[in-house]
Image 1 (cartoon, helix red, strand yellow):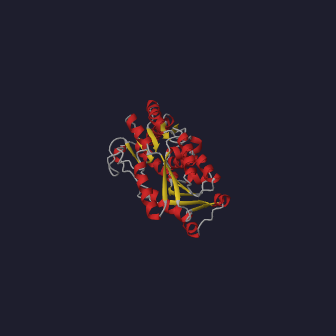
Image 2 (cartoon, rainbow, N blue to C red):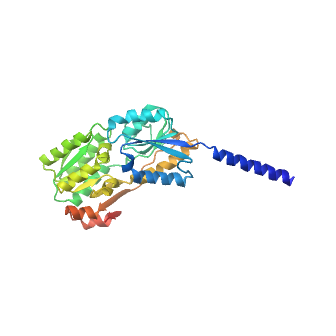
Image 3 (tube, rainbow, N blue to C red):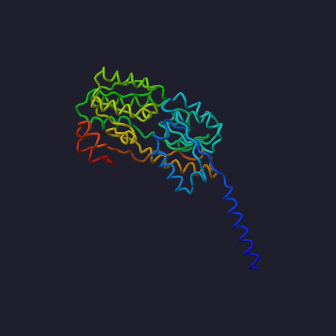
Length: 322
């Protein structure tokens, strides 16, 4: 009897081993706004989340990365290419990318960020998304207005703030209202500049100089993120204090970032991917919001620009880059 039990246990163990060896390697598509080399901190955070969920890259999953390189018009084409590659899940960043992936097919979509997924028809509600999309939203109130308040603290002498926005982006109208309302209450003239591609950014630089802008407010829209180095160099050349929407700008040499922690959103997105790979339906998984904004100051860049950082900002900073 004992021998038979031992034999059965051995057979069961061999069966489990064989299943593990022949287990499926999941394909995770990534519909992104920036090249992979510029997105490494966020990818590192996502990979960490997948490891903690028990997945080994190239053994249990592979990433299929597609970048629009800041050109929103390419998202639909890239989404269609991803769907043809038949991934198990598609990860997206920005509302436009989520919309493109949703329209391309029925493959589950996990948003690493979306400014307002309800207003633009991506999901029905945050608690019950429905359809094939879930994930994380960055719609946490008047963030753009608060970013302008940080800029006023950083540069109290500033009076004319250039704010490039991609007015073709469905989220731009809300952000514009926030910025203009905050600017009025702060006594700042906000110069809205329509930037939809790299050429538009060059024109915006010329307009900002011609209109004597003395500070910059930069969001995390795809065009801006993809051209962050050019924006940072423009700010440095003209000695303009600038507040950016995410830490990737500060890592590239930008002065101050105030906004959500995108790397943490990518980390949290891994838990959604895990649940979906285990059989959960995206429409049943509530969409989560960030719980905290972060203030990051690049002290080294401040020194290079000759900008003095007020003590109250230094004390509030979550991180100082030296």
